Amino acid sequence: MKLQNKTAIVTGASSGIGLGIAKLFLEEGANVVFSDINEEIGNNIVSELGEKATFQKCDVSKSEEVYKLVEDTVGKYGKLDVMVNNAGIGGLGGILECTNEDWKKVIDINLSGVFYGTSAAAKAMKATQTKGSIINMTSILGIVGFQGAVAYSAAKGGVSNLTRSSAQDLALSEIRVNAIAPGFIETNMTKGVLQDETFSNMIKNNTPLGYVGNTNDIAQAALYLASDDSGYVTGIILPVDGGWTCR
Image (tube, rainbow, N blue to C red):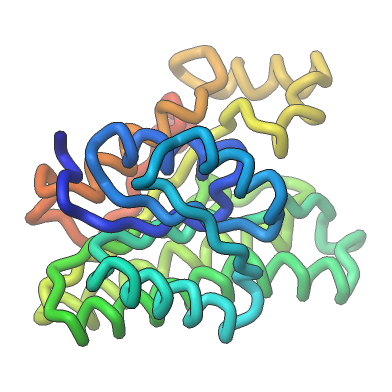
């Protein structure tokens, strides 16, 4: 097992990509703290997954909650090896439609939340001299623009460069920082738009592999970045997108 004796936190772990990552990490031997704002669902999930799975409620837009999440994890397990900053929301609306409130909500969760998670995890890893791995969730829309998603694209673009900069800041501490850029993946967040036949066909026609991905595609990428298999990898943005960004 690739994560034996390691401890990981996965934010946004009650559904979708985060849940897929957290479950795979468990299968690979890690102690996994599932974190999300939905306490009832989170507790129900971990109750069926054994003693290595625990849940802690956390709103990633609030720095004090993120720092407490990391502090409590280190207090329980003695260290933090892997931090997956996955929690996020969608944000549709172009530059003419996006309101100040829309903008702030998306930036607070999708960008500031990743900053808080990266900062808190890095400080904890350095304090315990842990050669850790921080994995941030960006998007193909953090690499290329997309009509009608100005706040989401801006936030994810910020995550990409936050990752690159943090990787350089933390390299001498042997803490690796990487990001995954998913393409269009079947989750509850994308379910609505993918049910639109015109939109779904557009996505498939613009994806060289010709189909929409699933959460396991992203979980396997996260496992690679979390494990020693990627020991010489830091500062990358890894597209898992069926070829969307290679066009």
